[in-house]
Image (cartoon, rainbow, N blue to C red):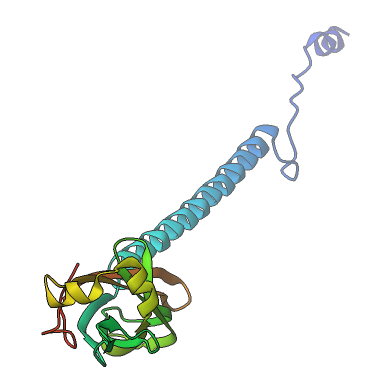
Length: 224
């Protein structure tokens, strides 16, 4: 009887709860999700950095090429000669206005670019004073290859009636101090490379010439 009581008086063994191996712990799951999130963010940052670096590299390359290899320069305009095809006719001491006088202007256009220079139009005008137009000529459509020089011959007519209206003492001035005329050559066009690099071109050269009876056909001139 006493042995039975002793057995009943013994305390029960403590109960331990163990987790099953097939059920992940919450802390392990948190660390796993956190690591996955950090990896995805790292990949996103690396991807964005690569795209930004590539974009910057392309932009810098484009700028360097546009300032060096593909930099477009303005073509060069030079007036080579100015000459009259015939002298002024005088009848009874006065200028014959029945026929105008033709003047030829030879110019050179040099294209220093590695691209075509497309000339839209070339205009030459003659002035006595600043505002009076006494002759004008327009030439259109010319293409100058890369690194080439092209010569053009421009022809204009000097309208004698306009010249006499601006200079009544034309005959006396030709025999004396000479007649001052101004010619202005304008060239408009564009330089284009690969349909990306373009440059609008406007060239102008002004020449001042002095005509006398001695050098009427080939007057002296100076250009600026």
